[in-house]
Amino acid sequence: MTDPATAPGSAQQKIDTSVPHSARIWNYWLGGKDNYPVDEEAGDAYTAVFPGIVTIARSSRAFLRRTIAYLAGEAGIRQFLDIGTGLPTADNTHQVAQRIAPESRIVYVDNDPMVLAHARALLYSTPQGATAYVDADILDPDRILEAAAGTLDLERPTALILSNILGHIADHDQARSVVTRLMAALPSGSHLSVNDGSRGVDPVFEQAQEAYNESGAVPYHLRTVDQITAYFEGLDLVEPGVVPVPLWRPDSDTPAPEPIGEHGGLARKP
Image 1 (spheres, one colour):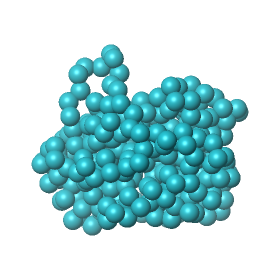
Image 2 (cartoon, rainbow, N blue to C red):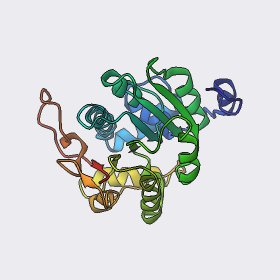
Image 3 (cartoon, helix red, strand yellow):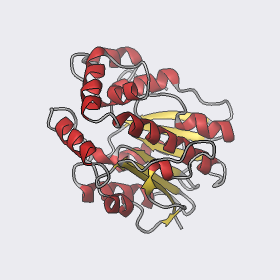
Image 4 (cartoon, helix red, strand yellow):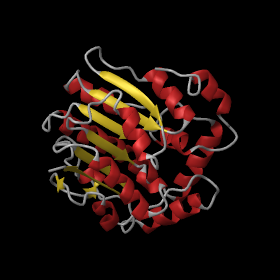
């Protein structure tokens, strides 16, 4: 699965450890080890302003786990297209899906050589299923669909996973257009899972994110709940709809969750 352009060795040569990287910062907040001192410094600077970002990062990951478990379990989905996968950590999409249905097939998409190198090195499929990696930008949905078709049968129901990626598209209408194009290529019975940072819950979070965006890092744009809900237009939302991610079907053995500035939902294509 490894090609010269994205092999671990070549990606390593492109890594600039003097500049913080959003995927490595997120990995740091999740308790991962794939980061550098510069990422820890940037992550600590953010948490000094808004300590709740660690809760958001971990709640986002837990939301992903619960939605994938629902898709592979109750919904019977066996194909997953995960765009903007980020650095591997615990309970990646294929691990959750293949624990429930070992025959599940997963395509991870990212346009960061470092992320793809780590994914190829660390993410292995079950013998019954398949896991593949595509180097593509979310703004090129046709390229993504063409490449994904090498592993997935896009005439069968497929789950499209967009976790904390749409906020990197500055224009909300463009982000909606990308989602619409991707879902249009998938058949009835397919699902869309989206979660993104949200406005309207915590002004301190919003201030911290604005400062981060102005720092020269790759910006991430928080959306209103209505804007996040708009991604699901024309689809049938699975209960409880678009909610703060800790409130989406929380595990029964966890304490009552609190709303946070991260909303998500899951919907089925009729």
